[in-house]
Length: 520
Image 1: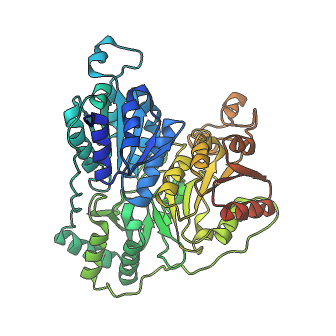
Image 2 (image 1 turned 30 degrees about the horizontal axis):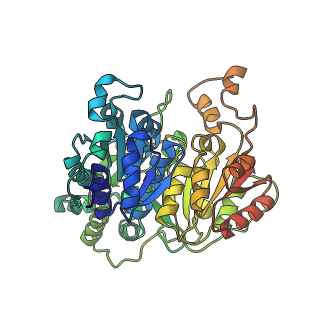
Image 3 (image 1 turned 60 degrees about the horizontal axis):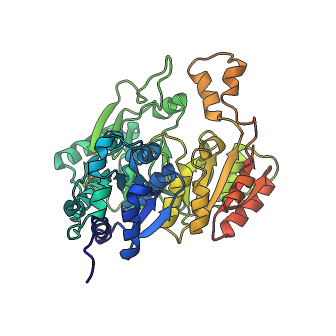
């Protein structure tokens, strides 16, 4: 006689039936029945991370490339808390994720065991939907609701709390999540008003794009609108996934540095937002503005991030009569020469522009080193570029894990700062274990270089030795090549452009993970 299905198995079957078929996991005792159910249910790929920030970041990267939520499996409140920084980034990126967080058995909570915590309180700030499922008979339906929440709008973070007895008790029948609702369409009156505003503004108009408005077909529509009205195109400073390169509409980002951003935006008289927010400074600085658009600039919100952004741009192009117009700002294939000699930031950009393969996925956390990489990579073969949307560091290598799982036929190129990389260097082990096609360049300037600049930006003059010491990473020096090898990843060190070119060519030719420590 077949044993009845327990709650954990009914949940896993519900997730798989709802097309959630990847689970990034770091489980503990309370999740063992979910782990066991993974062997009973075909169709779920499980990827182990050695730190919960790797798990949550990987789920973010998976959604950005697949437009489908993955699940995570996390161990009680502290395990969830370890993953919150990258859930913050995922929430800002509007990535859909289903977190499954184990909890003590319901009857055990009253005893206040060491791992007891208020998991709902921990989850709420970084989640759009939170629910604890106290009975095995209801967990399958709650799992389906979590999937529906994760697929709402542009994507949301759904956190489902699974008590241990809910997992091990006899459960109900698996439930399939409802299909996601269509995204809301833009209002016709808003389209007409936007068309008039951009036409009147001419070169003073700007179309600010975000989220899926930065995909190729939407960008083509934006290029047609620009050709018709003369408006400029710009994206937010950080983007979940920007499709760019030869044959695509070229678009720049709002610069990070306040003075540079003010210069880019100084002549804008009317800004139209499509899936983007009005540009603001990343931080507040003494005697510098928070709002980056000039005084008197009018703002029109054409479509919010959860709406049908491509449909909004298509409606706007139709209203302007430019659906058949050739898009402006198309990027031609134009690779720079790969330079030799000593390392400079411009030379690194040229090496990337010269060698970046077609259809690459660039995951960028190069922070200060990478601010000037866009111009010399704009003419590389078509690729996409991913940024950390929430500013919480340690995002790039975990997101690269998820992107590589979602798109195994594409090369992932990770641009990582040495300080940022230390937050989630455990990602390298997962890359090796799963043999993921990721080439990582670690910019080893041996400092929190961005913070050295920020010290000046906030008005600190002539910092003392203790302040300077808090922003350096050279006592002791971190040996990235040895660390990568210890985690199963082939690696090499480059100290000039010739060595970088050789190492990058080797990494791009490899089918598995490869790390380059670029000493700067």
